[in-house]
Image 1 (cartoon, rainbow, N blue to C red):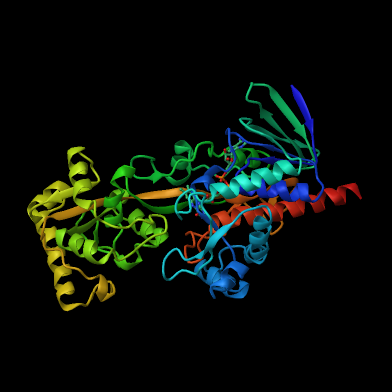
Image 2: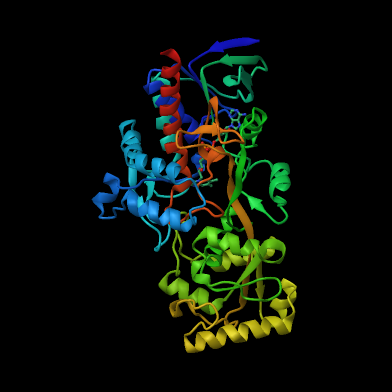
Length: 486
Ligand SMILES: Cc1cc2nc3c(=O)[nH]c(=O)nc-3n(C[C@H](O)[C@H](O)[C@H](O)COP(=O)(O)OP(=O)(O)OC[C@H]3O[C@@H](n4cnc5c(N)ncnc54)[C@H](O)[C@@H]3O)c2cc1C
């Protein structure tokens, strides 16, 4: 058994854990981090950027949004069912956090919207290869890891924390197992748990939400994110609170058929297995809204229908909805990708010459599908969606010109959200809302600020919460330790 001593132990080196560790080290506290994997960053290595409110980056492009405006948008969006003090503390710190990251060498490509109606809060990290897209934020993780190391933070990789040490009614350490299998006991004055939720733990997801990974639910599974920290915190009396899923839509086609996915994310006719249209498709670009709507359909999936005429239009004029996550949204390779999908027997993409054939392939009653298509095409012909009021510019008839196409969209997720209740200082609360001395949590484990649905209107929100709550925890732990020493 190896014994270590520090002021602060941070469990995990994702963005929230790194922010907590850097902040406590900047405040003169000896800090240790245990990270389960052989690298830092967790889910953030796959992401692009974080929320900032009222930042100098936004001011450069006249995209300012004040804390007052953002708080108003967020609290209205969540119907005031979330901790306004915590949200206010997070938003208020976020502009300084962008400067703080820049000081450690992070460069931002700019502040972006996720889609037209959202605010430009998504501070996308300048990618190493210059092309904005997935994984851009990994260079932020590198800069944060370097900063932590420069400050003398000891990061132990491949060293999963196993439990919290709880004595005299306070958390005063962490047990862990080293890469070599040696047991470690780390004693300290404050612990911050930042293990990123349980998006990689299908059993826990089934138990908490009744969703079955790979069947009616397709979460992105980030290795290591198995709910360890939540289990440790619940064990010492943390309030189990606000568990949720950060839903999105998911396409199960392989990456090389991305052209098909781009076509499938356009606001064409969406139907369920019963052949019913179920939402205004112009909201499809908001992954939260689309995921929520898909989650309500039989089997928790949907089909998006389009045809060769629509594809031809997109090839000539560009697609209706572009996304920074898929920067290359041209459909030049659509036909060969469609052929490849058919040859490979992909079960999430369908091609048919007639409505009958399409109905058969989708297993939908043919008359019902004909009715739905007829009703939709009539609305396209007169340019008015009298059912869900989709904008007329998106009303494109589906007549089978150059074949009918259908793509299957499943309920997916970036992972889970929440699990313990914290206050604005990131102190973990027990079932009586009292803080558990010495215990702090940040990032996804403690992210209960969206109510029932992630807020894409202020994009960059989960990574933003991770980094800013990590900093808030770092400040609070330092104050707590100073108060113990007084
Ligand atoms: C594909 C993808 C793209 C995304 N893009 C964005 C984006 O652009 N903007 C945005 O705001 N959000 C984005 N997100 C979400 C964002 O990445 C997360 O909200 C953020 O990374 C959460 O940070 P975290 O520190 O709480 O947890 P994580 O980043 O999940 O890190 C958790 C860490 O805990 C470690 N760990 C787990 N158990 C233990 C243990 N027992 N001991 C020690 N360590 C442990 C894990 O190995 C991991 O390193 C994206 C997510 C995904 C999956």
